[in-house]
Length: 95
Image 1 (cartoon, rainbow, N blue to C red):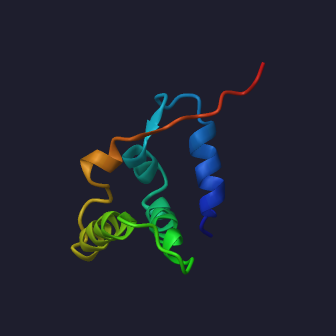
Image 2: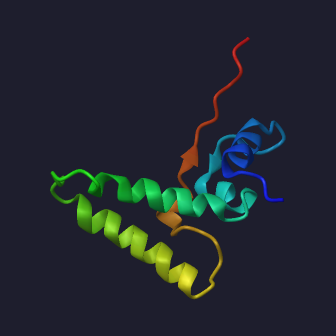
């Protein structure tokens, strides 16, 4: 049985042995590419509302298209360098 993406993400972000902060491409690799689908959903969310944000459509559309083309070619599960090397800050457990 497959582990839910939310559980995988929680485990990856809670892992103390991983480098801090984790990049988006490292997150993709550690979740075996499942977080890529979540990223596409998040990138498409602004287009659900009827009022569009000027200039957002070409940027988000290009990123979604690049992700889709890479998936279609069965390429490596990685984002373009500019986006993939962005880091996700981890929350430190208060203490």
